[in-house]
Image (cartoon, rainbow, N blue to C red; front, side, top):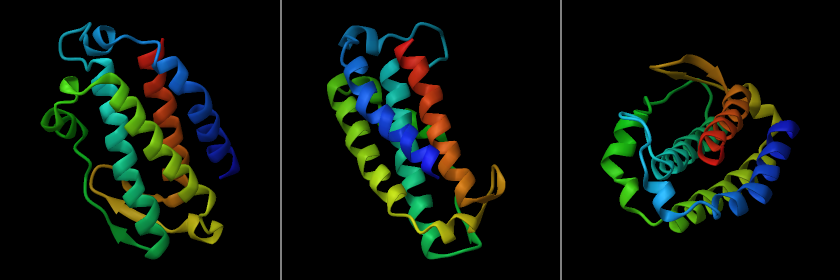
Length: 146
């Protein structure tokens, strides 16, 4: 758990400055057919934060949950992230993740063994979901920044 929170904290301190160096035009471009723009990737990271926020909270309250599938492609499509201002997406992602960092740092370590069933993944422990969330954030930020 400490590693995940430390990693997320470092991301939140360093990455916003790098993201703000990307222009509105660069953020809106789709370089490959069928691939997301940088704005859509950041929107996806906001959606991921939203979905994982629910998981982090619900799995601390209850154990052995049934949680819904996260249809990431559809979430990005219906929210039209490419129409949003780049700086607004950066700020939304940053502030949401600051809250998630607070949630993770406040988490009862005994709850990390709680599980939930997901249609697309099977049964997962809360500890795995926390670690996987930060891995996921790092993966997509590399796509946006590199």
